[in-house]
Length: 68
Image (cartoon, rainbow, N blue to C red; front, side, top):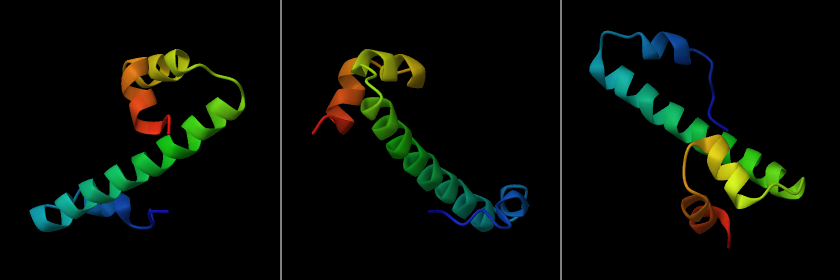
């Protein structure tokens, strides 16, 4: 999992190199959270349509990403 210690400071940095690395860390964290939550939703019987709606994407898109 992405280490969030100091992430808030890096996000607010005036150094673009630091700020952009923080953006990458946030993207990785968001992906990890999404994988976990999609797995939980499927285990609890959610449809691909329900998951897609919750994420603001189509059921086809979410199924293509996680349906394997």
